Image 1 (cartoon, rainbow, N blue to C red):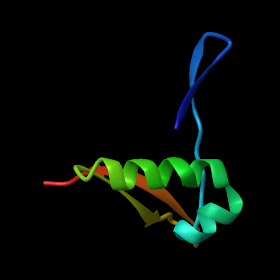
Image 2 (image 1 turned 120 degrees about the vertical axis):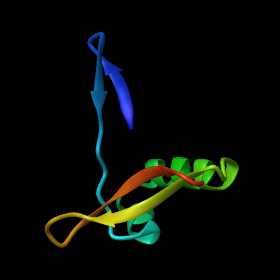
Image 3 (image 1 turned 180 degrees about the horizontal axis):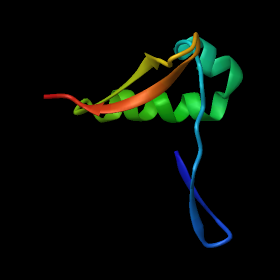
Image 4 (image 1 turned 90 degrees about the vertical axis):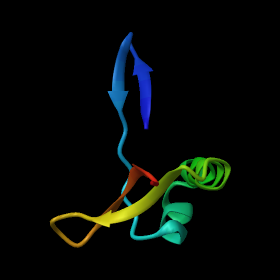
Length: 63
């Protein structure tokens, strides 16, 4: 996600193992995940593993 703070665009990152974990840790972000994952089927939001053992959502276009 991105926000504008002090006139600058700032990227915000949220990490979760899956959608349920995202809902528990960041309920406001989970609402956006649900909105855009169902309302825009051309965009797929998924959880991709990091180099370590946590995961973060990754946005990709579906073919």
